[in-house]
Length: 70
Picture 1: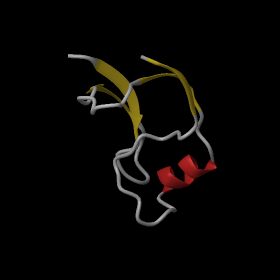
Picture 2: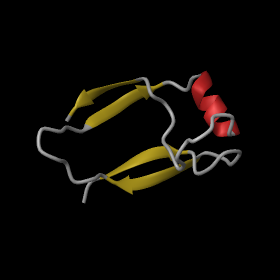
Picture 3: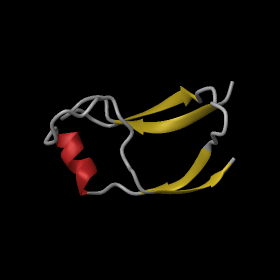
């Protein structure tokens, strides 16, 4: 069982949680990115404050990442 840690926004206006999660089973022609760096931008701040409509929570913030394919 392979596990990874992730910062999770469980809902708007709630503290970010760091959880250990099981990696999902990979589909054909997919890969795992080992994240080395990820940025938090203004969009993530708006998500945490609940200022964007229609967002499915929980979510993992940071949509710009640097990593290596495993």
